[in-house]
Image 1 (cartoon, rainbow, N blue to C red):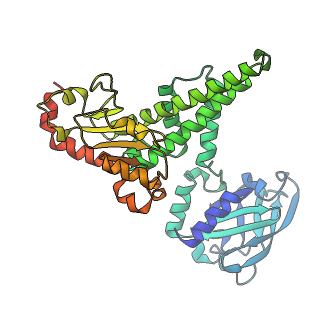
Image 2 (image 1 turned 180 degrees about the vertical axis):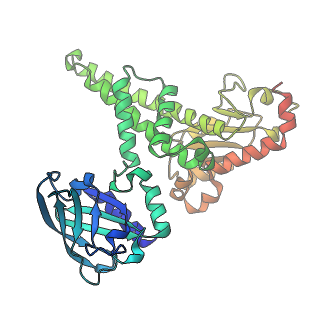
Image 3 (image 1 turned 60 degrees about the vertical axis):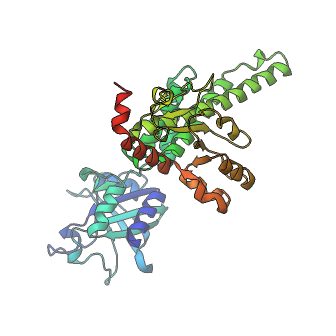
Length: 397
């Protein structure tokens, strides 16, 4: 984006009211008119006045407009309602004003009210026009009126959460909570499964954060509907608080597994969750499945193990004996900055950490090359499954 376009977008996003229209011939004098100035759509009166003009009357207001490159104009906004007229116009731009020349016809005029009587003005050309229209998702009918600035993704997410909370009577089960969070994220950030397939690390973090916000909102709803008189004493209150903490811990782990499962499904990986391996051991993910794992004619190189723990400090050893057939194991975690000593121990035990791409920089620089982003893990499994594709099919028929 050009600097001019960036400034125009930033002004519109910060503005109290913003407006745009294509400059037409009679604004720039191309038709021989001596009334050069910018017309305004009659529905754009909130840009200038506190109330719409009344037919049969005239009114005006002086405004200061800041243009690019330090240009400022003390202009005059009019409403003409006398006789047959019913129009708004801004005039007084000075003799050498560069934006009311004939060759400006067809350019996009943008005016943003920053404070009462103080405006930022822009005239965009060529590709800047297309990018401006795309950024604010303007339809052809919207060009010539007030710009409805789109909500930020965070605002859209908050409104989506509020709507779900208001329309859901019971605390959702973990799988449903995760699904709702992904739907909220897709809607708020204009994302999709295709984008999640391309950027799995970013998608997973977005889903986890969206679910955390949704979960907290359900918690607050549940808490504020509790009658304080239901707690007979402090001990009951403490027990209730402990139950909330335990539920948080349990749901955090399960939600991570649900989101990873969704990422793997979107990525077209073959996998199975909670496969029973040896004894009562149940790894979080086995690629491709338990049937392959338990068939000793199936190549060990074709098997992949992944554990999932939101935090792994002092808990990573739990996954070491969950799948004896697979010597090299992987553990996905959301924990950042594990100590160098533990990273070396993991390396010695043939365990590789998998974390969101953005988290790798939080680890000791000496071990970063040993830590995998989720995208790299998915690619490794995909290549492995492609290599053994014919063999895999025997185990799914």
